[in-house]
Length: 306
Image (tube, rainbow, N blue to C red):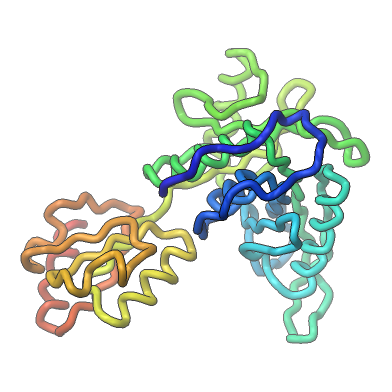
């Protein structure tokens, strides 16, 4: 995924935002945030931090609300999500992050009902240069198949909550950081978060950190580039897969028909379809060639990769 040059300002700037560049097409949460920030438009990133009882979504689920009131993604839909979006608009007006607890036991008009509570972090993200760079790095890291931790350092109580900084923490270091930590603190924090399965809050000295494990994207290998494969690739990319399309027909397997594919390969035959690829536990395979005979050959090759 290619990015235009960064625009923005220092994070301590308090002036009004304005449109700066044409938006580029992004469908991932970090890509959408980057687009908004790079056009000097602040956003609110909503993340479910904790769930008590039943809920339609799990901890770590995210959505974005921009300065125009547009929402991207979903944290569960229905009354719960509608209230969260309205609150995000208020956060945008105030320019201040907050935690909110939502009751999930209200029955909506469509019959959806959950009997629990959700703690949601509504993080106001200003369109400053460091934030823009951080989400650019987030998206590029995902594109490279890297996992990491997204950290937000928070100080104060709910009534006076303050964001002290944001960072991306990788296994051997830290980058895109405006969080000031000593080596000892960094080592302690790394030990604390390394086994965190989903979004949570970790305390360190006088600070708390919202810790969000960001797993590398799964790769979907789409074997066959026919008419059904085209919308399949589009939907897979929308929900976060890196899509690889493989077919022996250049007229079908091309960027015009698969604009959201990360990679498109013209293969010589299906007997060697996975020859150039290393499939692992984060790989998924969908076989939909133009005939059952080719499907069988592709399936035989897929089974040999396990």
